[in-house]
Image 1: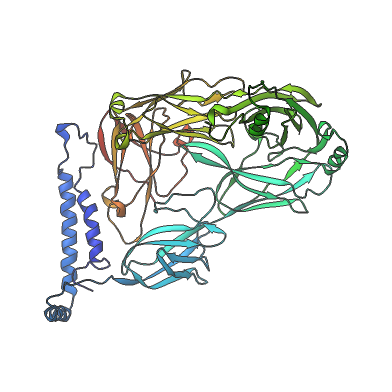
Image 2: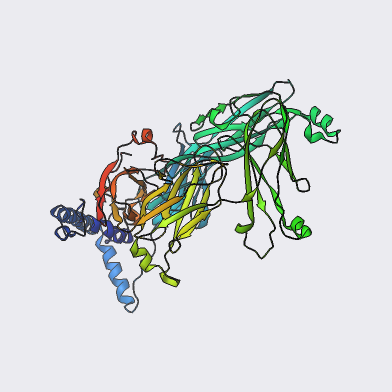
Length: 631
C-alpha cells in the first residue's frame, strides 16, 4: 500500500474528506448573520474539532508511512528518475467487494437477487444460495449499487432521483468503496398482496367483475387517495393484487348490469327508459360510497384476504334535459363545432361514481341508469368553437344534484353556461413588483395546487406569473380541496391564503355545484428567512461502506399553505443544505434515516416524533446542526 494512504482509505478519499473536516470548525449553534455581533468565526469548540481531526489524519499518515517497506520507496525513486519529464498519475485503485442480500422482514438470505453497479452494464451478479455476492475488481470511490429481486422491493434511500412509495421497486444505495471496508449487507422488503372472493346475491359465478385498488399517499403532508391497479375476477369469482408495498389501501368494484335484463331491455325501442337489474359499485366491505368503505393496512410480506358480497339492485332510468339558448350563429356551424360530451357523475361528497351516461346532441338530453342514491351530474364541453379561437371563452359547464329513490327520474333540467372560474388574486410585495419585468428579469411563476380532501379525484393546479394580478382555474367537481402554494422565486414566501375570509391553511376550499367559487387571495412576502442545516460532527465524515442518507422535513408550527418538501443530506454531497424562502415563525425539524411519507399536517402523527425546535425571524439567516435519530 502506498505511503500516502490511510489503511482502507485512498488519497482521493482523503481529499474528498477535507470539506466535512472544514465544516467541523463551524460553531454549531444558531447564528443570525445579520447581527454583527454574531458573525461566523472560529469558535473554541470548532478549533478543538479541527485540531483533533488534523492530528488524527497526520498520525494515520505517519503510521502508514512507517509500515511501508523501504524497498518500495527505492523502487518509486528509481521509476521517477527514469521518467523525469512525465507527470506521475495514480491509477484508479481497485478492490474486491463482498456482501449479502437479506429479507428485511425475516433476516433470511435471499438467493438469486440481482446486484448491479450503476454505469457498468457488465457488472451484474446474482446472489448464491446463501444470499452472497462478490465483485472481484471494483474501482474504489463512490458507487451506486442497485439490488432487485422479483417479489421484493426497496426504498431508494440516498440517491437523488425521487422516491416512488406507491408500488415497490429496486433498492439503490450509495456506497463508498475502499479496500478492506468489510462486507456489505443490503435488505429487500418482501412485497405484499391482497386477494379475495366475490359472491353474488343471485348465486351466479362472479366472473369478470372489475375490481379497483386505491392507495393512501401522503402529498404535501396530507392524506390523498389515488388509483393503483385494476383487475377482473376469474371464473370462480376470485381476484388478487400482488407486488404491493406496505401502506393503506381500499377496494371497490365497478358497477355490473345483469345480462338477462339487458337483453330484455334492448328489444324495446325505448330501452334506455326501462329499469335494469345490476350490481352497484361497492366498496370493501359492502359499502356504496367511499367514506363508508373499510381501509386495509398492509405490512411487509403480508397477504390480506378481502371478500365481498354484491347485492342485485334495480338501476332506474334517469333523463336529464339540457336547455340551450339560441345562439346567433349558423345552425350547421353550431352542430359541427358544439361539443357537449363530457359527462361526470359523483356522489354527494364529490367522489367519482363510476356510472356511464349518454348525451344526445339532437335531443339535448342525457340518459343513464342508476341505483338508489344521491348524485351530482356534470356536463361540460366547448360550444361554437372555431379552431383559431380562445378555448376558455367557449367553455360551458353545468351541474345538477338529484336523488334516485326506487323509481325513474325524469324531466330534470341541467342548464349550461359560461364557467365561473376560480380566481386567485395575488398580493405581491413591493420588491417583487419593482423587479418584475420582461426577459431575464421577469418574476418566476407561483405554483398553486388544490388537492381533493375527501377521496380519489383529480387535482387542480396552475402556474401563475408574479407579474399578473391573478391566477385562474377551471373548477373541478364539487367537494373540499386543500390549497398549497409554492413561489418559484428565491426570497419570496407565502404569507397567507384565504377564500372569502376563510384561512385555507386551516380549512379546505369548498366548491358547490350550485354556487360560484368564493374570491381567493394569496399574499406573498419578501422578508423570508434562510435556514442552513448541517450534519453534526460525527456524521459529516465520508466513511467507507453504505452511506447513510437523512431525509429532513422543516415543518412550521403555525398553519401554513406553503409546500414543505423533504431534503436529503449526506456526507458525500457536502453534509449541508439550505432553505432560502421560509415564512418567518416557529418550526420543528424532523430527521429520518430513510425516505418516508410524513403526514405532518396530522397532529396525531406529529406526536409520535420528537422534532428539533427552531425560530426564524424576518429576514434572518440561521444555521443549525441536525439532531440525528438513532439508527
